[in-house]
Image (cartoon, rainbow, N blue to C red; front, side):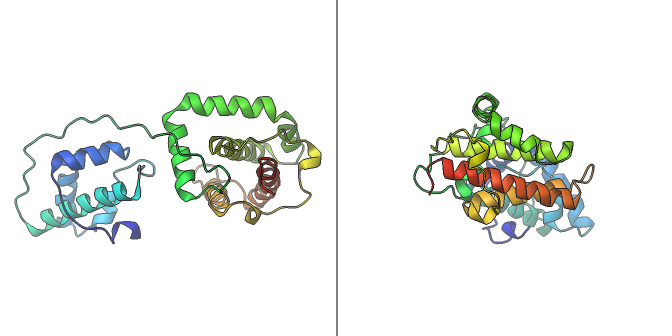
Length: 246
């Protein structure tokens, strides 16, 4: 919750806050948020607890400024409610269609950074046909790599996760302007770690593995997670090198 604590707390009005909420993927409207804040104040519940409940999944933003503006408006509204001041919410929230994420700029000869990785998954979420196009490209050009993954000794859950992650890495590299060559067995290093990849890409894989091993419903066993990490690292490093990185 620390990312919400260093923003300027200012409520800019119902219409602005409603648009920001909708853009971020929240189904809440400003009236409901204000009521939740009133109850929270009476029960001494901190604002971040209420704010975290506004999304079923992680909120989504086009930029850090947009995130700061949303949390600043939410915290500003909470402080207004907590102060006992009259908050004018008579104007009903405007129904706003969330703008779709733009296609991220290719990183080309550079390395993908955190901004590109976030923009890439937002773009794929908003344009499922584009995601499907990259999935088909992966299936058509990386059959040897998928066969290698299948023979790596992972169980069904581990194989499914590894194939998903490797496919996502392929898609991100291609979206970033790199052409990933067909990965035959001889191109896959005998040993590799995620540290050999660009840090933003490595961090994304680590985060995905953490989510899989800490899933409340069906957590991936830790040992299997370690094996998936090793397999994904080898496959991803092979793709990264084949895509023009020496």
